[in-house]
Length: 99
Image 1 (spheres, rainbow, N blue to C red):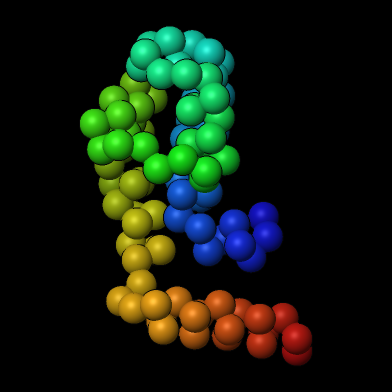
Image 2 (image 1 turned 45 degrees about the vertical axis):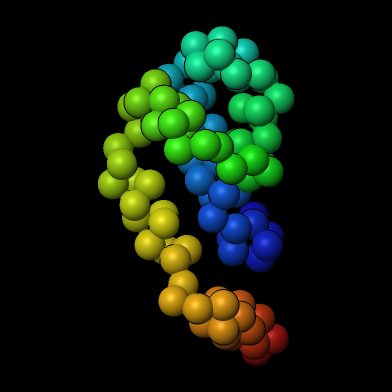
């Protein structure tokens, strides 16, 4: 996972849901069919390229039995108080890598 991906909430969330889908033995096609969505939309969500509508997100969460506490935990991890705080975090991480 590169730094961009580490800093991207949707990417991390999509990766988690992908792992859950695979653990449940579902294909992207099966999930798409169950939710009446396109396979492409599922692919984009899993790559962090698509922000689902809340209603779709809830349906997917329930389908894969993902605890909302997991989503909340990820949100808190990526919920910065300000853009400046996010920039500072990324900058600090880059400085540590230089050492």
